[in-house]
Amino acid sequence: MAFEWLTGGSMPQFWKNYLSLFDIDEKNGLKRYVIFDMVTSGLDWKDDVILSIGAIGVHGDAVEVGDFIQVDILQENSTVQSVALRGVPVNEQNEKVVEAEAMIQFLNFVKDATLVSHNINLDVEMVNQALKRLGLGRIKNPLMDTNALYQRWKGFSDDTHATLDELCEALKVRKNDRHTVSGNVYITALLFLKLKRKLEI
Image 1 (cartoon, rainbow, N blue to C red):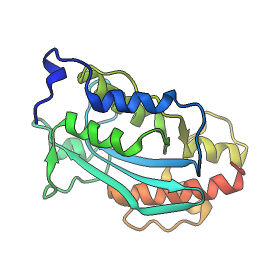
Image 2 (cartoon, helix red, strand yellow):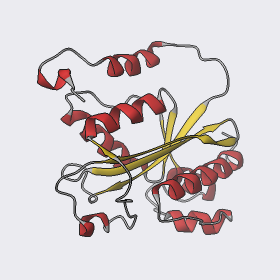
Image 3 (cartoon, helix red, strand yellow):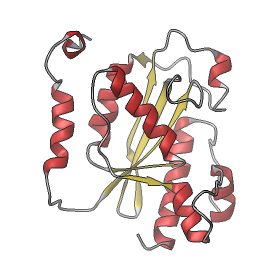
Image 4 (tube, rainbow, N blue to C red):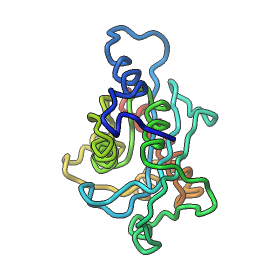
C-alpha cells in the first residue's frame, strides 16, 4: 500500500477523519470504551516497537465480543528474545502488516472511544511513537488505566503498582488465555467492568 503523505503528500484522510471525531461536542447513545493491549519488543517506548496490538469494545456494561481487532506488525529486526520481554508470543502464522497500515486499522477501530489498558502510559506512548514515525500527531482519546482504578478502589496511593494477575485474583476473574493478546484484552475488559461497577463510573 502506498502512503503518499510519507513522501511529502498532504495529511492522510484517515487522520483527518480521526481528528474530526473530537470536534463534536455532544454525543448520543451509550459511551464506548476500547480496551487494548499489545506485544512490544521491549519496555522503552523511545526505542522499542509494537509487534502486535489487540482491542475490544465495551458498550455500557457489556463486552462486545464481535467488536474486536488484532493487528500483527511486520518488523524486520524483531527477534524471539525481544518478544519474550513482554511474555506474550506473537503468532508467526498470522498475516502481518506494515506499521502505517496497523495504525490506520487501530485508529479506524477505536474512533473517539475512551481507551483503557493496564498501565496505559507505556501503551499510549508506544502508539504515539508509531504515529510520530508516520509524521502524525498524538492520539486524542480519553484514557483510563485499570491499575489506577484498582488503586482508587482499594484506597492505595497512586504510585502503587499491581499486576494484571493480582487484579484477577482480587476481582475473581479467570485467567483464560492470559498470555495471548486477545486473552489479555478480554481479561482486562472483564476487570474494567468490575472496577467500573465498584467505583460507579
